[in-house]
Image (tube, rainbow, N blue to C red; front, side):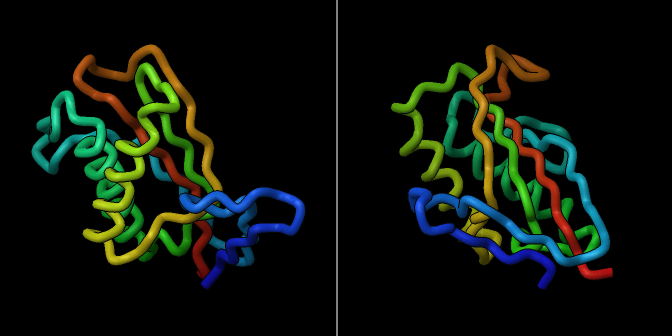
Length: 136
């Protein structure tokens, strides 16, 4: 595996992710921001943050699988959430947990969550992009 996730002493342990990832592979993979579209391009879970988080993460997993990767290869996630407030964290994490159950792995790479005013279309509430490193 090309990615090692670390929680350094002196930094808080966050249950949803690790603070640092160390990449030793040689093939970089950049996954475009994924939203809650199904394979036909229809929005999944309109108005439901947990459902959209689940679908966006599953879509990232699908993109990674297409190039021989999994969430275990992800070095960094960036998540954009419309109208973010800290009160939305339990719903967000519910979506991550549901995606993890479907994917068979827990996305635990370092991540950044950014609150935004809007995404590409009004019904999208979340977008997830990933950078992964694979052994060539």
